[in-house]
Length: 154
Image (cartoon, rainbow, N blue to C red; front, top):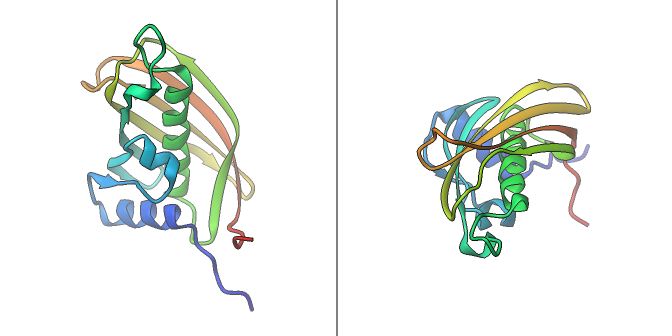
C-alpha cells in the first residue's frame, strides 16, 4: 500500500485554520512567500489573508500591476480550498476570472476568500481584495479549481 503524500502548504494552512491561529506566515511555497502572504484569520473554507504588494510589481504609472493583484486573489482562493481538503488532496486553478475595480498602491492589501462548493474533482471559490484599511475594494475574482490526489515529486 502506498504511503499518503500530503502537500506542505495544504497541511500548513489546514493546521493553522483548525487550531484557530491568527497571523500565520504562509511561506511554504515561493508564490505566497514572494507576496508576503499571511493568514490573518479563518475557518475552514473562509479565510482572511494579508499580502504585501512589492515595489517591483508596479507599472510605469506607480500602481500595482493587474497580474500581481490576480496572483493574490488566486492564492487566496487556493488557500481557502486547501483549508477544506483532506490530507493527500490538493487543487490547481483551471479557470480564473478577475475584475479590477480600483488602483492599488505598493504595500499591504487584504483578501477575503471563500469556497462556494467542492466536489470530487472540481471546486469553486471567490475572493475580494481590499486596500490596507479593508474598506476600499480593489479587485474581485472567482475561480474553478481542479481537485486531485497529491502526486509524488518526480
